[in-house]
Length: 79
Image (cartoon, rainbow, N blue to C red; front, side, top):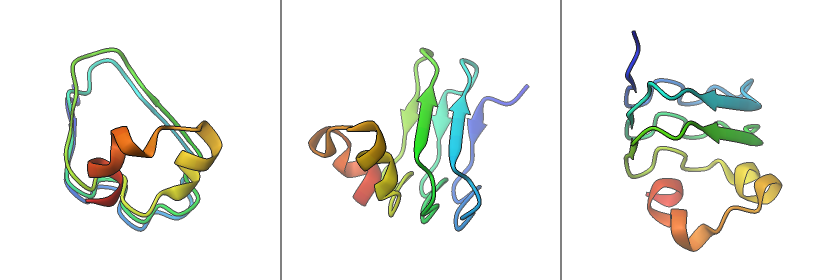
């Protein structure tokens, strides 16, 4: 089974608008969803997860649509 999303796995995937990351995922790699400009919705399961720096860089719509606190996520969003 899949336990991690590797670095740059979905980078530049501009067709992504929504992601649901299941409970089995324990790591999201560096830049995994970077520059997915149209990503508006993100759900992450309750499992212990390591989100690396820049995993969601340039995904500003997530912040806008879900009102996520940028201060808390600055490292993963901005790198």
